[in-house]
Image (cartoon, rainbow, N blue to C red; front, side):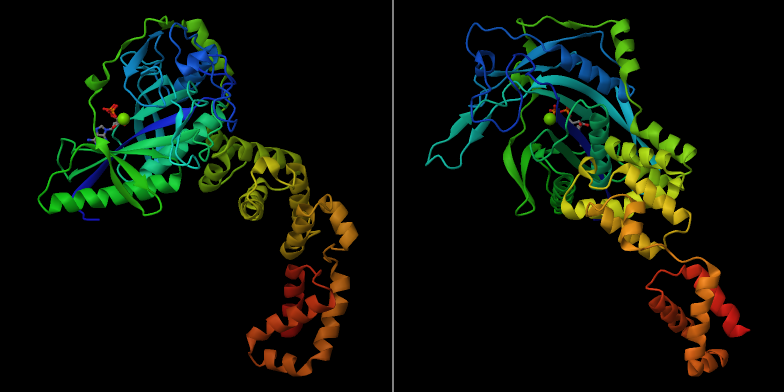
Length: 480
Ligand code: ADP
Ligand code: MG
């Protein structure tokens, strides 16, 4: 990318709230049901029916607002956003416009240079999702599935503070981690429970005014967000460098072709004729309510990261990885507390071998076949020298395969490391005696041969001799 252009991005993230019923009706929000089996008269937009606000969404939005240090509106108002689309039978979406429940807030990400950077949150408002049009498998017709209609969404709008596709992704990951910590959304991106629109513009570096933006709709993976923004930035720079102007428009990202293409020209807010919904009362909440919600909040990722660095003396990178998800953090912490072994060693195993094995099998940490207590038992046996690094991996594989605790596997497979020096000495002496030529060469300066001797000792002990002890003893005897 050319150095003369500065990239400016603001995200609108739609996160589906994890309520059991819809935002204004009692229909279920469960994903994957047969079309139109979870849409009641309210969701179908029948005339004369009345919406009733689901109290849980107010609590969830308040949780989110407090977690990003935002102002919580004591009074917020639902508005009608009017437009026509087949998946919106009422002809309007109920949203919040002038008075959203969550006002200005902030969070911190790592920027491209690894420094902490503040990203402003403009607002977060509650709204209902629309239904879905279905075009596949209907023999030339389109179908409408209204199961999703009325599903509660929290739309989180950022300030145009992001300066690269990578920053946009770290911001989105941060929001994802926050809503998952709060357990207000399952964050499932494949099912569309967490998706975003990216507003992208460029401007000559140093210019104050923002450039004209394009809005990339409905990006539902971190990878697509990054690729779509990068594509769009290149496209805009090319237009501007050719002397053209960027149009304000709404674009769709095609992940198969890795390109953006026009969807429609951008509508203005007044096209929607927003007005307060006369069917719904304003939402009024008081300080006592807000304080009760605050008291219920779990420890958030940033606080947990700092605590892990302090209490377990973890490196900042490791603490960041482990606290990105609450489940992973809980796993690490229960292993570290159960251990008696070193917490950093536990962290290394969780981040390294365990995460590797989970990724390979496509499993979440919640489904790990190796429990936190088992992993703690393994690290303990490394710390007390029962296991070498190599044997530990073998024990880990055994635990993964369901063979039991570290101690059970060590006993069953006979994996105890030999650290007893008299036992090792006998083998070392035998190896030295059996290889006079190599001994002479080593003493004449061929240092590399130490590997050969260590290898011989390991072979004789079936890989169980403590490598540190073997090395030292060989060096002593060979140079002596
Ligand atoms: P709308 O609701 O029409 O999409 P908003 O003004 O509420 O528009 O802005 C939506 C998002 O676009 C916000 O995240 C904001 O930060 C971002 N944004 C606004 N102007 C620009 C711009 N020139 N370049 C990049 N992002 C922008
Ligand atoms: Mg928008």
